[in-house]
Image (cartoon, rainbow, N blue to C red):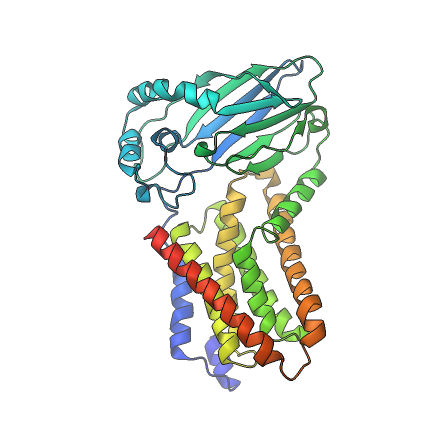
Amino acid sequence: MWRLEMMRAGVRIPNRLLAAVLALLAIVLFGPPAAAHVFQTSEAQVFFDRTGQRYGLKLILNLEAIIAGIDPEVKDTSESPKATEYNRLRALPPDQLRDEFSRFQNRLVEGTHILLDGKPAPVKIVSLEFQPVGDMSRARRTPVVMEGSMPPGTQTFTFQWDPSFGKVSIRTMGIRSRTMHLEVVERGQQSQPLVIDNLKARTVTDMVIDFVKIGFTHILPKGTDHILFVVGIFLLSTKLRPILTQVTSFTVAHTATLGLGTLGYVNLPSSIVEPLIAASIVYVAVENILRPTLSPWRPVVVFCFGLLHGLGFAGILKEFGIPEGDFLAGLLSFNVGVELGQLTVIALCYLLVGIWFGNKPWYRQRIVIPGSLLIAAIGAFWFVQRVAGGA
């Protein structure tokens, strides 16, 4: 229908472009479920007893991948040199997996570092539950509970563990809190020091601020590919209307798939999403070179690529395991942070380039084309790298 209306208005959509757009939409909406063999981010829930004398740590682990020594950065465990060992462990019934874990248990404890007021504290495993084999196409999640004592008057709790165990999503909630503290700790990094007394006073506003910050930092400075895509949008024209047209299209699209992807209604493996995000960067940059003005179909294409970028963000948001009652606030707050990050990128581009050179007759030849060539080259490199990594 939209194509018919555009044709009536005198706008012709190339058949190849239309086919590519429809194929992309089909991949996003009807693609396969998320990759079964992705190294799953571990989850950790921290809790403190009412007396302030003990802490607990409930871990939900992709235990077989950790025992097998799978590199946490691998896109798909089947691509790891340790894939055979992982598959062997994944097929073990609970009793046999328990035996395998007994030989690994000390390493897990020794690799889990708890700091109380900055000082190392002992921790021990108090319970664990091995799940049935179940669907072999999905990672098995194993709950492990650790505990330790706290000296009287302990103020802060900090978590860190061995980099080979991967990253971990931490949640904690004080006795009288209205919302959880949520944080993803990258491999080998320390969590923020959790001020135990302050956990009692956390509100929904605290959570909103947390997620705005997380969304912003996943654009600046962490989201290099998203930054290049936004810069590519900016370069075509420094005028407000073309920028707003594209950014609005991009925002609507990635907001939709961010929500649907986080809820699990739309799933695509990262081995598909990440190369296509790189391809979107190449497309925008190449069109900047080939066309001096905004094409009628570019907002449609940007919208489709926005669907992909939203799925990329959804992978980040899923790691937090947001409680159902806080989901909408967390989702919207994260999205606000992402939008603020994108607007900051555009503002920086305008201050660094647009305000000085945007009206110059040589702007296209000296800024747009060289800049787009560089962006296209980086995007093409990422595309090849990601396809090779997920092949």
